Image (cartoon, rainbow over all chains, first blue to last red; front, side, top):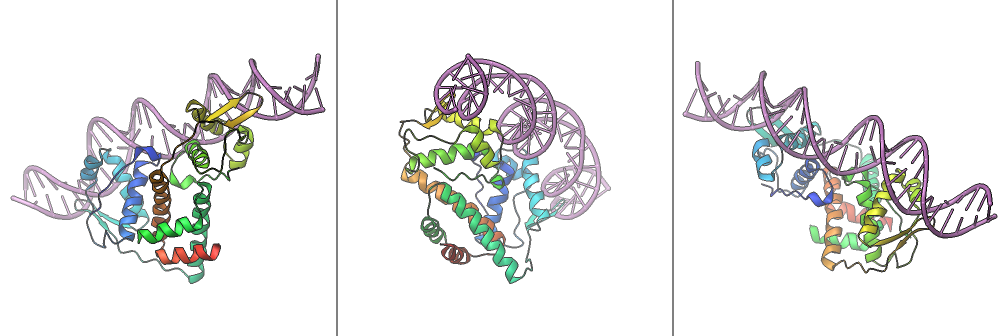
Length: 122
Length: 122
DNA sequence: CATATTGTACTATATATATAGTACAAATAT
DNA sequence: ATATTTGTACTATATATATAGTACAATATG
């Protein structure tokens, strides 16, 4: 289970921070297919936010087929495998990398800084 | 001069992203004391945001004694040294990389995919 | 069966953010 | 002097975010 944390300083909306952490949790293997997430009410209490804020995050991820929600039971990590072509994948990767390196550059970081950090993360 | 960039997807307010980039620019030596920033109108056009949004960022930084504004002339980097610790710099890089990789992961890319693409870009 | 739990769906309200438009004061340029 | 540029200061409006409160439907539990 993820140790959810909200940071008001970033300016990023709470519901988006929740979304991010779930996605990252799945990506890094901390959250696995079929695993149950905290209930909307439990996570709301835990993070000291409103029930609606958690529900919004879960709803958004359900629309993206990342989560599967069952009324009366709970919300679970889905089993999403999206089929896309190699070219589409590569274009997307380029797009993401371009966007993020330009952001990192605007903060004065170099490509090497990014690469070093990414290697530490894995 | 900084190459300002705004990212709507992060959820961080534009004015705060501008503040952040100026502070980092000073901290990393890209912006030096006495240097003139773009006029509020010029930067607003450049970033495709409202004049008020840039003005808000500049105003905030003037209150913090980071910038000095002179009506009719322009806005300049003040002489107060911004101390950004290595830890703060590293945290920012981590934050960017986390956001970066979580998005890339949600598209099915691995850290190696990202690193390879970044190295191609260089 | 009845009850509790869980996700869902509303309304209402408050605050923050961003835009649009306008206007003015101070400094500069012509 | 006059006009332009620049920062500043408003009003008004729209949207996004978050909270509070309430209620309901589907499922699980006793």
